[in-house]
Length: 322
Image (cartoon, rainbow, N blue to C red):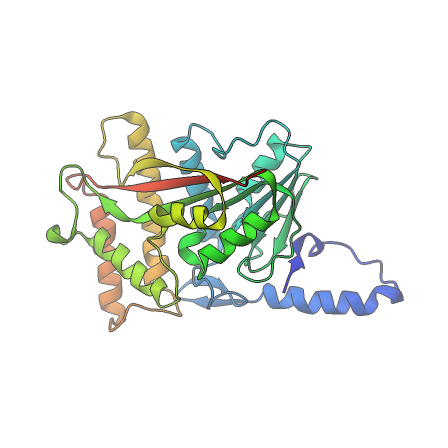
């Protein structure tokens, strides 16, 4: 099912020739806007079994904060691909709140920018060259082709067939067009060995738990460092990966790293209960008390400056041959 969400707030002149179409559109709109409440969070009923994270204001804030963190890490670069100064068509897969698509649309006013997501959580106001569509990017590609850039951020760890998506992206890029995949590697690193399972670090335990939960949905949360072979097998050339080190917490002396660490600390603080308290794939064998106690241990660990751990963001780029 593909629905142009720019039609959600459009006015209807009531003409009889459009009555049936408007009725169908209203029905579909109603379905994708249905929400359920669980433990104080709102979930989109249309996509909860596909992507069991909330679709409420708190989750939108977390996604937008992640966007700000990524911009700070890259020194305000929205992408690393060499698409030139005058791109004509750009698509953002798994656009989330749409903040990346909107800001890229402002940067390139002559480009048509499309954002696609399962959830209708994007801003109602957009630049005239930006369009949002509610669609499942793992289903049939219905969003046109000949793109200069296909961008996907925080997508591949949460979909069942990343290789199939990359192949569809290849087919719908123009010759010499670029794909860029930006994903977090959901595992911690520590240069001084203060992190890791041997120290019973709650954050490592949480990331293992999250990986197991999403594995039940047939996805791989630790696919980020493995995407190079996926791009090459799809036919991309000039495949490269740029890795950004982002601390967990404010332990670094370097001010930029400290700022990035504060972002990630807050983002994880919001993500931990969103995953542990989700209604569809709860942690196995835990009761409510055990679940909330684990969340609190994780939150305390996030503020523990003696654990000098970090995570890595992998920015993969690849170019379609001419």
